[in-house]
Amino acid sequence: MLANAQDMYKENLQTELLTRLKQIDPVKFEQIVLQLMEKMNYGVGSMTQKSHDGGVDGIIDEDELGLEKIYLQAKRYSDNKVNEKEMQNFAGALGCSPVRKGVFITTSFFDERAKKKAASVQGKIIRLVDGEELTKLMIKHNLGVQVKTKIEIKKIDEDFFSEE
Image (cartoon, rainbow, N blue to C red; front, top):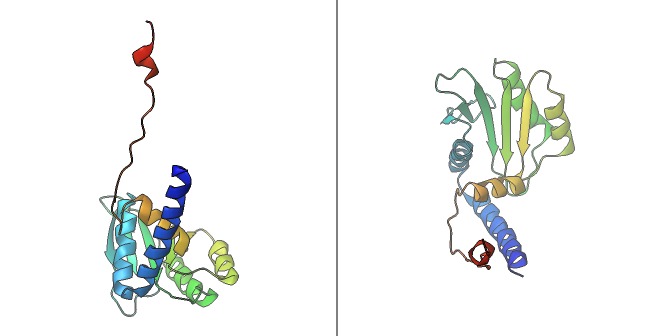
């Protein structure tokens, strides 16, 4: 019963979190995406300039010397799906650079053509994260959420009662 209640609570939390993410300023959303990547231990992130960013919103340095990088694109949408044109812009930014990895994160979904475009980019890896996965990752890494309460369930300590 407790596990079922916890699952229901987590689903409601994900829905509430996604609703909040869809309402925040797009620049704040980009900052959240960088924070999430850092909390997931991918490295230190920095935002690109706000306009004319060439399809890249942030860059993660995977190591201290910045030898390996990850490009980030963050789209805060209420209803729109990420389309092929937006994916093409991101893929183009990756294609024109030595960076091999990219992460495209949205509060929405990716349409089928955008998914195909991401999968078809040669020599690069583009990881797509939709709104549902985004909220799961934020909850897992305690970003934008906090522990409300903990429940402790006890059982018999068999070692305590053993005859040895």
